[in-house]
Length: 124
Image 1 (cartoon, one colour):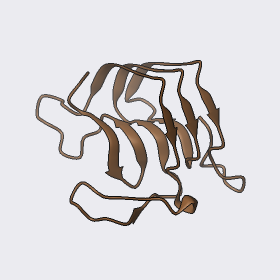
Image 2 (tube, rainbow, N blue to C red):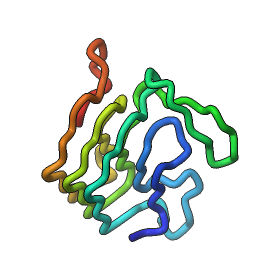
Image 3 (cartoon, rainbow, N blue to C red):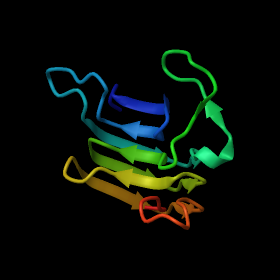
């Protein structure tokens, strides 16, 4: 597992984020490869839930953005999501186009994500 994987990251856009480090290293350290996430319940990164988190710099009471993702793959290759429940987020799974590849999503229960009145937030 790469050291660039941020689990339950204190950021208003996601719960689990792969790649796209805020301070990339000169050797391309913002890319995550060969990771499998299995058997987790990943939930409630949504502004409307009222759930808050503490940010990386220690600021408590932070709220999630409307489009927060349960899982965000910003820069990643050979990422597997298997047998997880992904629910209650602005976006269930969000993969940035053009900067990721070989993403396998299998046997997940993905439901209750997105916003009925928006084209921009959805399950996958």
